[in-house]
Length: 242
Image (cartoon, rainbow, N blue to C red):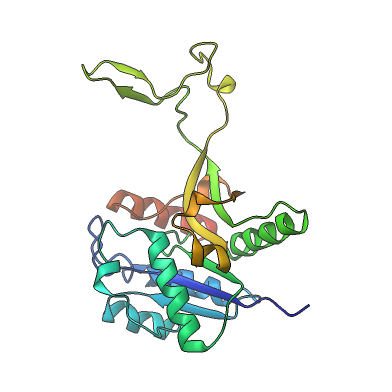
């Protein structure tokens, strides 16, 4: 059997609103995006590491960190409300056309979560392959973590009068103890492994058969605010034993 061709793309939009310039901001001595690039390059099964960006500044930083930037992302795919899936589809098509290669698997690494480890990327890829070998026909595997809040127990929603109701309930009534609430998982910005054939044909990550690769809660953060940045900086120092 021929080896799978695996493309890894790291997306980094230039117009971040919550934390301006976060993708190239220095984090423990190196740009945020460089953490993701370094880890992607360390995964032996990945054939090509590409950065998809609309920013020349990010592109320059990415190249210095060792990634390829073979195209600039079009403005239509660089707004704050652009779907991640469509960015992936564009990157896959652009890389295949430029490289003359048909990729088998597509890996996305979210650069806003520097806490993701090399082993998490390898683990998600391994889980995808194991699911396939077991006949479960995965379209995607994505990083998840046990949710810090549970819609059956401590998440509430206001009704039209502003009266608070539980977000979800069971058929037998209100859940009175956290331990008895059904397990729910957070979709973690981290690593995604997709069948390239699925990416070419689907419209959304969860249209098909998506499975989770669970990581611990101390790695389930991403940079959306200054507080997030401070938390990640603290946790990354602890992760590195600093």
